[in-house]
Image (spheres, rainbow, N blue to C red):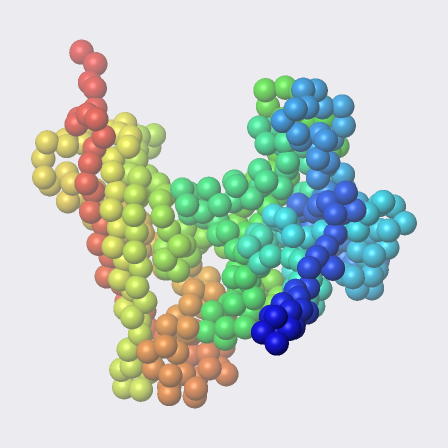
Length: 397
């Protein structure tokens, strides 16, 4: 009896094992690393940058073909465009390793909500790939580019975006997961970084682009695109973009240049920064205190009159650095208020601190509440080090 019960128990457990019924072999798939969406003649033009495994293998000594292939399809929907590629490609597209999702500027201005619906429904795609906007070029042209150092263009672009966000400031590395959260959060609007092609576009998609020390064409991230709802409405310049990363607490490191003459500067590297948006209600109206703490080091000095042996020198440099941080933040706030879009997250901070007030103000927040809100600053910059030397070397007269 016990033996029969054990057999029945084992058999019942086997029923719970699904096995690999839905498996797909790698040889049956095209691994997509980059995906671009353009709008052409009233239809979606979808581009897939597919990796060529044999050309990027470490065992491959000489590349006879491109490291990837760009497939394109058209359709009234993203899915239709993707499936139309079966007439060109020998396998189905696999989005599980997608690194970069490129939207044309026209698509971004038309609205992105419907465009991202299809990849979001794909159960094989992860949400950690980055999303950018093609500026002055199509999404297909961005993906059809030979890049130096890294054989896979999308990997190069993704790493450059993430590195520039950490070390430069006027860019933001937004993932698809971040994008969904911003689109669904009525307290903060979406932003995406722009990417452009510099140089010869004719050479961009040819191997000859890499024959010299300087590529004939290269990509460059420039500007942060601000949205209202799901539509792109404009671009923040470099100063405004730096202010954006400060205010949204996305800053890890950046540089500040303090002039001492028409051609001389003292360079400060910001090594850490923390920002807090502190909302409060005064006479029934919202007011925000922006507190920014930052630390930095002197990394360059072309000003002979700057004496690092004096405490007053550091006080002066810190004060001037605070003024620049404030100026950048104020520029970003002016842009956002002028365009009536809260890309900085003031509404989100207000909703968390004063939810009852937010329920009354949320519908008109971008058009009136945010634009009329008072914002004050409390900025503290501390300069810690001057590197391995103190004062700069002065030549003998």
